[in-house]
Length: 277
Ligand code: KIV
Ligand code: NA
Image 1 (cartoon, rainbow, N blue to C red):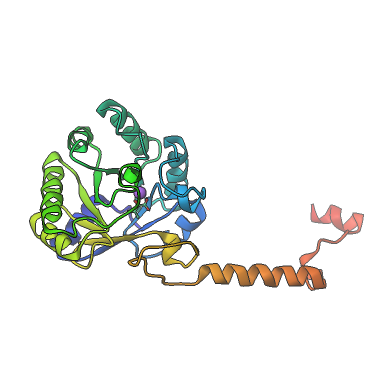
Image 2 (image 1 turned 180 degrees about the horizontal axis):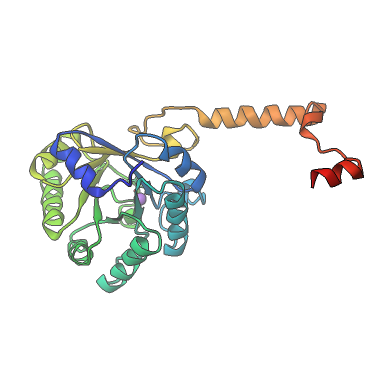
């Protein structure tokens, strides 16, 4: 496959074609997903929940996410790979944001970085874009703002909030964002936003008007039995398959059905061993 480029997704938008993203946090899954039609892999800071077992996305470091993004890149060399800028990797200053975004681009070879963006991040996005980095500006529900909001909640579900969100999306586009990602917002808000933006709009629980959609891989694959949002459609029961396989293996070990002779090594006579060498 030839290396996918951000421009390929712009081309899709131009042709009114939709595109898909899915999160990915490791090499093995990246190899599997690299052989699918999915357009972009996102090493999200949801890794803090799905990989590390934290109950929010605050406690994951740049170094950790860079390591995971590198693993995804190695597993899917031809795919578009985006990486999340984790909590406090871009908020303290534009300088800090550029240094960290640069690490994701250069060390992890991410095609894009995602920044949870409010009004203060408009200048951050502008500086990153002017440095040549493709930014996915993430608006609407911003999980890194959990401390302020108390709990995750859909945004832009009131008309005045919708107008605010659309103003923010347009400001981020004008600042040079490559994409807007809108999480957990009213489908009507997304529809209006999609009409006003010229860059592609990626939805995560924002309805069908978006140019692209993103979901968490563990939700899609049915590998996570914790709470998941209503838009997280499950396409497989991989968790149940893993449990069944682990139980079958366990039973075979207990009964002695595993291992069989063809799964064993044997002592070879010396002469034959020499010939084999
Ligand atoms: O970290 C994440 O999984 C995300 C989403 C948009 C899916 O940011
Ligand atoms: Na995220």
